[in-house]
Image 1 (cartoon, rainbow, N blue to C red):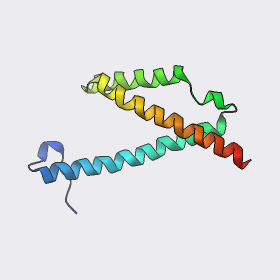
Image 2: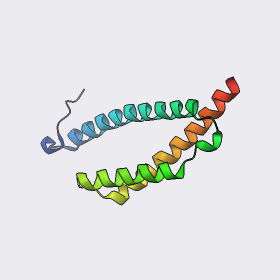
Image 3: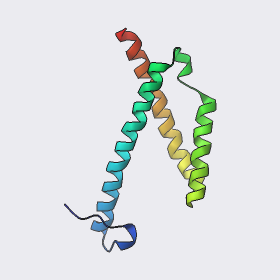
Image 4: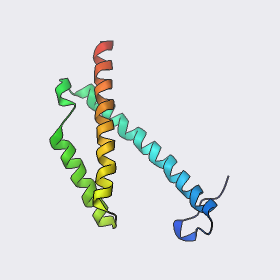
Length: 104
């Protein structure tokens, strides 16, 4: 396995790719955890109509844009990424909500 260097220490594309691959693995682990929270939401919400909450979606997107700006990243770019993440989270939660209710 290739040792992962900090971005500043990278000297080759092999170094860069090793770092990106590691970050991707870390992101997947965080997304698994995030989707576990969607499972909890599906379990807790009593009405399927509560799965889509546009006010909460707007709040999440605003929070991410603010964090991105603070970190020196393009807020609109991360807002677009998170919009897709939130939409996929909503879809996942709806499926989980249905599954829980079907299983009784």
